[in-house]
Image (cartoon, rainbow, N blue to C red; front, side, top):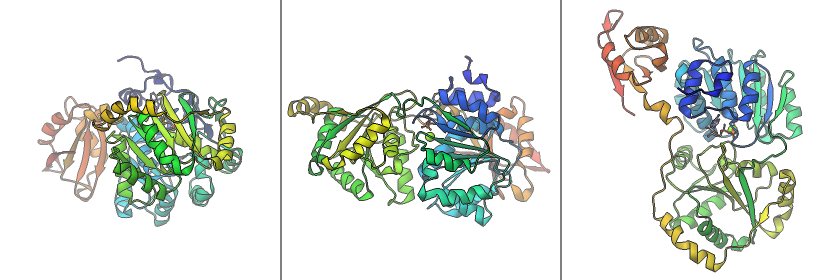
Length: 481
Ligand code: ADP
Ligand code: MG
């Protein structure tokens, strides 16, 4: 296998192998700087642009530091939205896949019982939104006695009014002997000052601090009055003709309105905002992630952290009132070295928000003239063709990692005193199978699941048929996805 430049860090081979399968061969600047510090167990405040790879900057050292034998959670990652909790759980699971690291996501408006069952299993790391995390701690269903990493992602948002009480209540309960890491693309000084309360002599790290927004995004605006916005939007979509686009509105009512109007015009679209059922929110996000539709109409709910491949255009149908919000919204495009465009509609009453944003970005946003009739006419057939073609499916992040995984179900569990270590022992003793071929193990009362990696599933299936535990043969079946 070619050299993977993550080998420069003191991290295990299984983690480097997982990174290779994820296509990470060269650490990004923030990863280069932060991974050694975190491995050294330093407290850190990190400001680094959107899409620069902050998740792995903390995910890698956490996966390295986790002791697999310990059943209680050792890392807690706090994030502002449920969608982000699910995404970060996936990201860290992928990095830790070959070390068999089990990550749980806990967030509101999902039945608590499901999460309680999940947390009862061996769980190495927990990603969650503050309210639900606090709830689990108070109910005693999330044991925090072994937490030795705390990450506050989107830190400025998390230490903001809406969340600060819950976040500080959680922090007070955590063991003091821990590493605390804060990450965001925007980090106002007040937030840093506040954060110092919870940290020990932190390293303050700003990566590419001369530019707050990445150079990969080109910024534009249209001056338009409210009553002309919708017509302008349809014209702009014809000339931009994006493959994948997020349109941000100020309120959920406006998201609903715009979604209905665009759907009437047969746009391939869906919507997300806080007023929808949780399962519909996750479904819309997953479908967008897979590239099943082109236009996602959203509130600020989708502004932070969400990482979806190849979003080519972010359109602010309503200008955000907060300058940080602008950076996060537009940061959904131009990620991981890709290119993107950001277009903002500005009405005559909103000039002052624009000035603030421009000052914050340290540049002027290019003003565009509305598309002319000729231009729209010329580009209309390409637009219509795209409207009538199915969008190209986007590949799942951990596809390569997951490809060779077979999930097996065993008809034995806790009630028969089956332990994960016993299973690891039995399976790694099978001829041709190594400990590294075993993935996540879940032991329930009367049933257990084990992932077999690297295409060794059939081998293990066959061998297990002849193995007895405490005199009994086990029934092993393959779990179909
Ligand atoms: P941030 O949190 O800084 O906004 P993310 O952690 O979400 O950014 O990462 C942005 C994208 O970059 C993700 O799609 C991620 O998979 C990808 N990525 C992260 N690190 C690397 C790397 N070293 N090589 C290639 N891609 C990477
Ligand atoms: Mg992030």
